[in-house]
Image 1 (tube, rainbow, N blue to C red):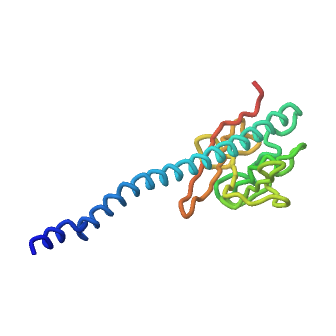
Image 2 (image 1 turned 120 degrees about the horizontal axis):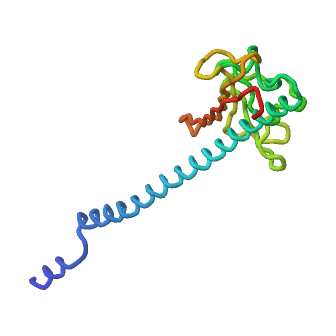
Length: 188
């Protein structure tokens, strides 16, 4: 009888010991998975933020180039960029795509804030035309105002502030990149 009792004691783990071992194992596996998930989310956000920054910078450069070409040609310095009738506020912005600004300049395409989509074409890159391109999460627009003001900038002004925005959503969370610069009506 004594022999049977000894064997019963050494038979194996109890249910409590098994549950404790499984809990420790789950915690040791879950920690690195959470860290990896957060790292992946941060990397995706950083990628989108870099793309948005480049898209905003491209628009700002095109706007400045259009201004410079206007000044070199002796035409109105805001021709093709915006005036008192368009591109004048966040409620009346214009499409900030490099494709929408043409030479010679024409009136910029208007759009409502957040509805100026950008598409990606594997051959030509980021474009505003949907033909042969897939939609992206990014939307881009700009507007002109008098410096340190909220009123519209006109061709009579010698200086205008241009604000370029690129916005996108990650799920339900909105993000944006804004560039602001001063445009002057004379070449230096």
